[in-house]
Length: 378
Ligand SMILES: Nc1nc2c(c(=O)[nH]1)N[C@H]1C(S)=C(S)[C@@H](COP(=O)(O)O)O[C@H]1N2
Ligand SMILES: [Mo]
Image 1 (cartoon, rainbow, N blue to C red):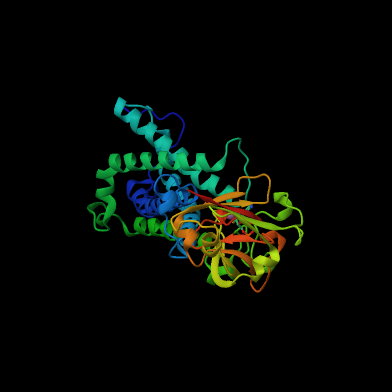
Image 2: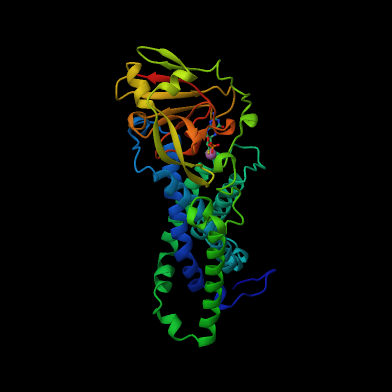
């Protein structure tokens, strides 16, 4: 016999397995898109093994799309997750807590799933506003917990497969017997959740999806705001980079035939114009017109092999984003530039004056600003 200690009995249709399944139908895909695009982002930001030299530099908008989807699906998951938790929370008070070893394990997996599924969108959302109210570093923990959630979710789907199956189709037997009023209740809940998902998406997705940029209300970055109509993640002052004097600047290219160039020598080399986005891992992205020297041209002159990888080093002295590496496909892509100009003007100091890297299909954090030297790797 069940012994109910504290909570009242929840009997409504909104707390039943069918409602939980209906919401899960949307929550599952949102989490799946978020997980897969998160893995893509991880590989592109920290390539090891074959990706270190095998990542494609096309399509140019690849990372913009996957990271935009990552942040949008994560944000959309928040109202879905709240609705799902609200639907199932009476079960958290089930008593006796473990009925058997199997039941205890099932509840443990649900506890892990809930904890991880709440942690991921919350930590991700706080990261987009660059607020880190925790003692650990965001990326490795967000990444590790994603695997935990994925594992717990697969287990959960397996355990619940019979119930999900029974409630999946609209025509499953339970519904036909329901009074019309109950059906309408569930429909209003689902409609409200759908409206909430639509609202948070429309008011944030413009940070990466430019046609909706005027609807941005809650996204931390307005894609239009910033010097030269491009947002800035870390300003020159925040990076501790002072004004770099034109006459003192040298670009060093370290390869089989190393050399240095002054700023005027760089400006005298063949200049190319490309249109490429900055796609920040934090979810905003913006396309811009860049003018500068092809990295491939600089490398040929240094005697580098076309399969070489290249390390790009900033004049910034401290900070995690002062160094990045280009795989060979990016290094030899004709769109990959050491950019000197942005949207028709000399780079603003906050955009990396006097020279910054811009390459297609690449996370924003790897588009190194204030470039001081290029190092050909064997
Ligand atoms: N040297 C250096 N380059 C850097 C960064 C940095 O902190 N230091 N931030 C990166 C990040 S996170 C992004 S999103 C882009 C943003 O470029 P923008 O400020 O020109 O828009 O620059 C990247 N390049
Ligand atoms: Mo970024």
